[in-house]
Image 1 (tube, one colour):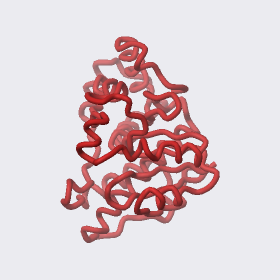
Image 2: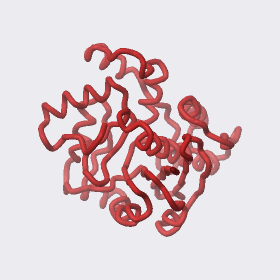
Image 3: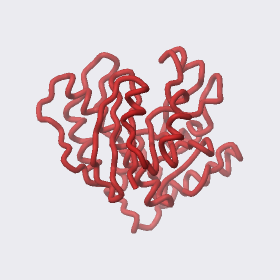
Length: 253
């Protein structure tokens, strides 16, 4: 039951694969859509990609992003106009149909939010009782994932890379993959892309093995998925009820 995560970026994309135990077993870089699709192995159970797969709104934000804002997990507001203006197109939407033919299930995810939830879960294991909403929100606001990606043409942040890798390593088996000490700029950029791909792959694995500990929102066929504990799921259900049917869950979780 392999699962896969992919980071979609103007720089070389990274594809990370986990086996059924959640162990990182393969990392491959790709340039362009054809390379990215070729890097996806056969028999993928769930594929998760860091790119919007469905963008029906011309302006504003999608329903999923509106819900995330209510959860104090603000995400980039995707719209067709904004993606065309900033990136010259909707690459995830273009890749969507091809991805669906390569995996039994396809979702999008947000690596920053994956890392934030995993960091939260380090001190709030699943065995703990859910917190009161006000207490949860206060503590959740204080949890911030490390910054490690390059900004524009800038450099990746080495200290942030190590912190992000430590968060993932606490939740899963990174196999033989390790960060290279004192990376040059290009290696740091590659490491950042790899960490994003691994975070995506972890989301895919969690959805495949523990759907009840995953939050799904948005499109029915290719939803946005993030790992979620009982606190985040309960808060999402509360706001879904307030916001209406457009924010109903897309499946288990």
